[in-house]
Length: 380
Image (cartoon, rainbow, N blue to C red; front, side, top):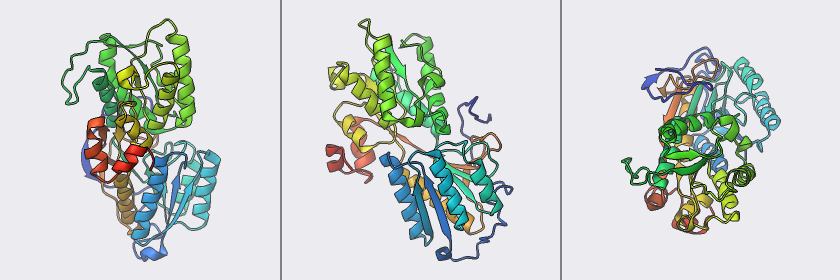
């Protein structure tokens, strides 16, 4: 089994239970020792931003789960500002946090904070985004991010008719003009998403079924700093001007996140595409099942999104935190995939689902993630 790194990520998954390394901040000889009452323990929760409804929901869910388990919680949002997140984590350590759960803004920017945590025997759980270049990351809870990328690419192929929803070959042969978008390069997940997507799309690009007309296929060319919607919109506008001013049309866009998808769709609609897929709007993918994009899918504007049930992610983070705080080792189901550049971080991976218009009810409404009213209004 190969390890996946930033430079070379392959398809992964070897499931098996394994123990965490005892050499990091969460060694079982830490000061909590499993003897303290939950009410005497504090968990610092560092989230990246409140500009995305997804991260607000994550923060609230983790906080609620920890409080329900009896712990004191210090929840902080950093406004997508790296120095702010560094300062918030420093303060959590200074104030005596017993454990840290961190969703990083930049996965390479927290080495000093993690060293301080290790020096204070504070276990560190990386939440959703892997923290890189530090031995002081004790555990990682996330989704199977490579598979998320595969699902995004698969949904693009389904939307174009190259594949059927069940994975069988569709009737459409192309060629189809597509453009590619990736997330922020400082987010380790962005690389997994893009690698999974490109490993899925490459055979169709090689066969000529898909044509990236701009020629921009390297992740450095297609990345979107900080996952900003307006940045994606501007790049889509530039692509339409530079590549499609000859009268040709873009027919599909790989987008790794719903916020980017909405910016891309705005650029396309402003350029005369649409207003719906039936009216000529390209197939646009997404991720996170944000309510505004779920409404767009329901309205035949955005084609798909990836549902990562963050309630389950928050629950798993709480379960892992409880293990550490009891002086035990959390259960991992992957100990080979997530090499952070210094160590392979024991991980617990969760599964995700593709959302199309015809399964909004079963995946999102019946599960209680969104209500029918919220889907209809596009507001949480």
